[in-house]
Length: 155
Image 1: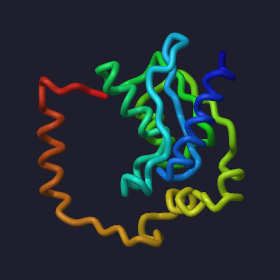
Image 2: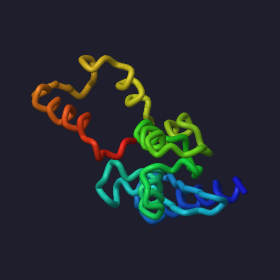
Image 3: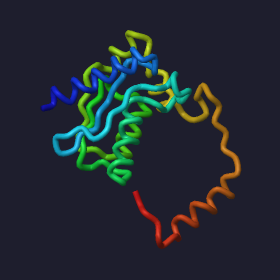
Image 4: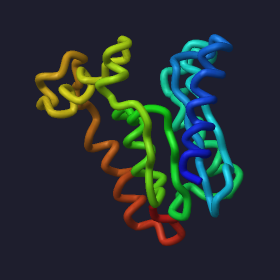
């Protein structure tokens, strides 16, 4: 069964690549042995740096299921998720992730995420893109209101 789902993720990677949608990456979300969402990389066709295969599939699955968490789902992806997709996966909370190519395989074809991993590890003052904190006190007011909110949906 797992081979069938991974095969579909790989097919989507080729489909998106052949359509000129973006890089060679595909992903599916599976629930109860059935594919409920699919995605391929659409970064260049959508002019959207977040349109990675996993993010696209997660968005579709959440819309279909009417939830922001995929605790009873599995994700199959043609390549080890990048840092952004990894974050999205952890927020979605699937029960498992299966991947085909490694991040080293992706780096070998010029999809190298090492800079992002390095930037995450770097202190905020040492990042290549400057990060400057401003208006913290004003923003903390919103956080305080959230903390006091009695009808919030926690995640």
